[in-house]
Amino acid sequence: MSAVTAEIITIGDEILYGQIVDTNSAWMGTELTKIGVKVKQITSISDSADHIIKALDEATLRADVVLITGGLGPTKDDLTKHVLASYFNTSLKLHEPSLADIASLFRLRGIELTELNRQQAFLPENCTPIRNVLGTAPGMWFERNGKVYVSMPGVPFEMKRMMTDTVLPQLKEYFDTPHIIHKVVQTVGLPESILAEQLETWENNLPEHLKLAYLPHLNGVRLRLTGQGTDEAKLQQELQQEVDKLQYIIPNHIFAYGEVPLEEAIGLMLKERGLTIATAESCTGGFLAHKLTSIAGSSAWFIGGVIAYHNEVKIQELAVNAETLQEHGAVSEATVRAMAENVRLKFDTDIGVATSGIAGPDGGTPEKPVGTIWIAFSDKYKTEAKLLNYNKSRLLNIEYTTMAVLNLVRQSLDTTVEE
Image (cartoon, rainbow, N blue to C red; front, side):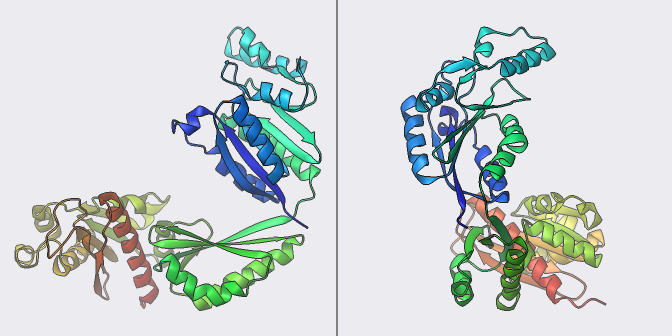
């Protein structure tokens, strides 16, 4: 069984100008995959009749389902409905149930129904109207030559309600769709190119109906394994068998399965082991603590932290010896080790971590250029420090450093022998 394909067309100059972000398409893609419809392309176009017609023509050649959002408002620049009526060789006619919905909505809001909003109840005669229970613009469902075209408002909560209540169930009924299942494996510590080399043999031996995608992000790569087939149970089993093989190929680089960020995986490890952590940050300026505390329930394992940006704070709050700073500098192994050890003692936690570096864009020297960063991990068994060299922007240096610390915690917890 071949996949049912879809194209999403978003209409609106505000998207092209960058005034709003198109979150609709991402949500629609996720929901369509759940019912076995594969999105082949997402196209954003301006509020122009010529552009809409051209986009429809091209989408018809590529997809079985064309989903359109935007351009259904009451103002003159909202052209979608009129263009669709012309495209499907029909005229607009008052749809009384839609007018009743619009009038009811205005009554609930205590606002008088305007002629512009009344015009929104005029729909192409040959469409199947889609009720909009949250707004004034009805949706429209068209069928032509075995293909489906659906037009919906661009307002996210209105579109999502239409999709959930009507569009997705009807698409599922209209098409005989296969199952499309994703398995996500989160990895850290290997760049995409090296990871691909290590997985080459395994990837080349994947069954034809299983596809692998590499999705790189900060200090890690998400592996998305996608399967398509008619037998859901068998497909799930095949995917799991392939995921299990990865445990033998890259065991030290997998930190989670599914859409789990590294900080959440760290939190789960700490919670399961009953361990606590504290942070001492210089160059990351609290970003590490922010990532850890962004996880719900982090109060069970995150105790506190010190932003020791100035050397005096390192001395006063973290008991770093002034001689250490004088001899080695703030950006040094000796200093960051002391920060990690002493923040653990200060907060009486099982683990202390620390960062100290030159985030940039200024402050570098020939001996310690911008991007020179030390990080450290300390527990009752050991203190470990690591030198990083990032030649990136200030914010990226901070973010990459934070991810490196989290990975150091993960690696250290994996090798820690608990009493």
